[in-house]
Image 1 (cartoon, helix red, strand yellow):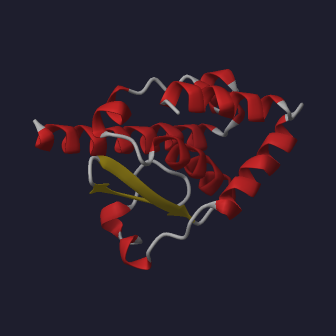
Image 2: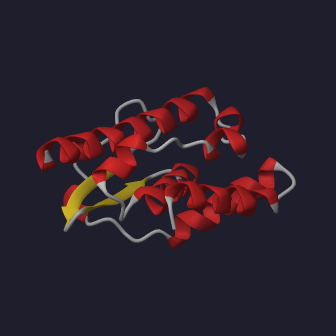
Image 3: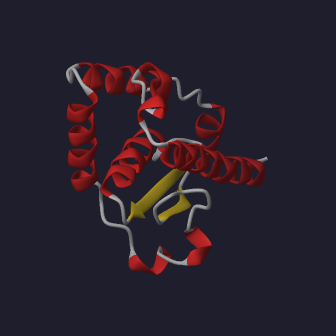
Length: 140
């Protein structure tokens, strides 16, 4: 499944919920399904700046694909990062760096977050793309 197709699936999943309280509950549900991050990556080196809560993001190459792992001390943030890692993990660096993450606007995520959480969302995406760009550059 391409990133575009996966985003269409996310949009369909969110359309099931009529209001944002239900969508927040869905994000909470996603946070519980996310794989645990290895404690050795919960250091300042992997902490995302600009997030209201503490959020760690780690990336590593496995073969030709980037594998993202993340965790947060805030359940909604953890749900958001579960969405993003689920979408982008297991992709090539080129796919991640070139991804147009249109689902964020289509489901209304950014405008339904507090300003600090919305800034955190952008910081997470920026860091994921920076990891992808670095791995892509190493491949060239």
